[in-house]
Length: 192
Image (cartoon, rainbow, N blue to C red; front, side, top):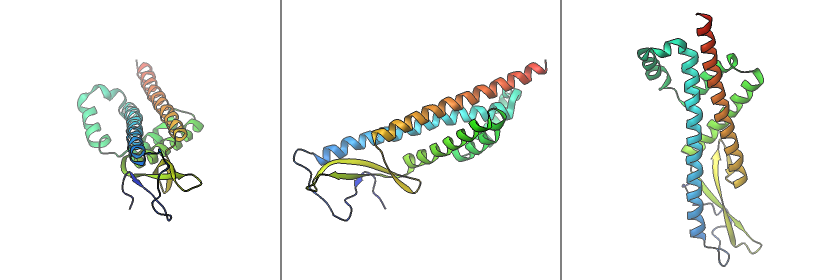
């Protein structure tokens, strides 16, 4: 079992830091950064989930959304108990009615990747791998987290990529919400 925020020394065992490298300070600074990253990804996922909820409500309830009793009953008995994975399954059943097959496939793939990453950030421990010079002295630390079954380094490049993915998913989910709202308005106009 990995202890959160521990240093994985590996088979060579504990090593000395390079002169001038403060191991404890570096670990503490990275730990703050990792916690910010974790919180950001969980918050970004919440923004996606909020839009997914809106799509489900708009598509499933339609004009009945104006009835507070119906909306409350549906939300409390059906929507709230769903896990993020359950919401993904429902929205992916709805998505083909609102977006192209290619966009739907990409959206589903991106949502499942976000779910895996969100679960890792919310539930898996992080640890640090030492970076060493030729003399096997520590010159840096790289934070890692288990993403699915594979260790993933939390590098700046990786986090920038993830941030772009989360932003794109928020935008896709918002566009899907807008499409569901437009569909509802079209249906209401057709009945007038």
